[in-house]
Image (cartoon, rainbow, N blue to C red; front, side):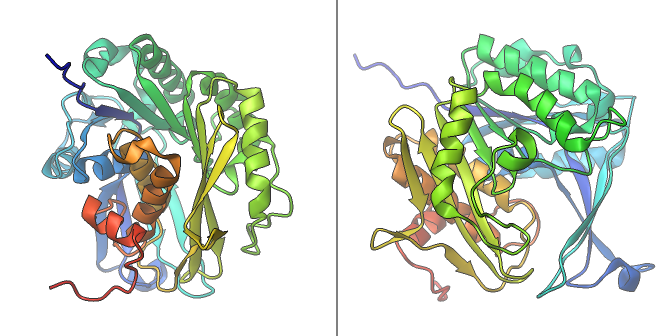
Length: 370
């Protein structure tokens, strides 16, 4: 009798907020008073959404206040199949908000946070039933955004990581440095606080995810001649950056970097690298004729959530029986998934596995499918 393979179920933990967006490419000075678009989003919620939309069992854990707007937030997650049973409803705190102006051409997009005293930031980690949360789960994902929210949220993240490892889960973490958030230990500078906290969390992580800036901002490891502000990346240095990170955190199995070259707010080149620590091998994506050739995204609809869609695609591929057999295929899938997310309004990546595989095979023309 063949043994039955364990169903892959991913748990994510973090803050979800209301996203308030000026319509189109308007600024808020043009929009208010007037109409804005409101959705719900947050790094770990976005990952859970991506996974659920791709067909993976995904549970999202957070704390939310007891009111009708939070009800609507939970309904949104349930509507796309995310398990919300372990979301705590509390009397303390509030639903955080963030405000977005979508840039165009040489005008950058702008984000304004209003998330102080969010419920997840004032809810102690021991109020979550981690044993029940992780029962039957195989993977846990969080990010560096959650511990940046507050000291309590940082302690909750550490507790969650410890409980996940005790339960035998694979753990992934996106560094996700946000300079505006790391302010709960004044007058300590944001980067110094982030490094101090994240170096306590990372020993519990198996799969580390970051972007072209995170290694420098959080860990102090530079990628050669990379100049993010100028949209220039020193691609050849990223395997060495990954090796240095693995030296500091030897339990890491894989390290992934998204590689974004920002030509303008409307035009980005997009790719990624996956480094396997055991074999000391780096895989870049996308590749053409054995050369790294990033996707050229000439008309970005919405780039916010692009990194989270990469994390979702990466976790999905690594937990997929077929895709997960080859690291090159894994990074191709994650990169293509996040490329497509740039064509979708809002943080959630409403694409299918078939859409992603089609792009991986080179179907990038955007022709109408009938």
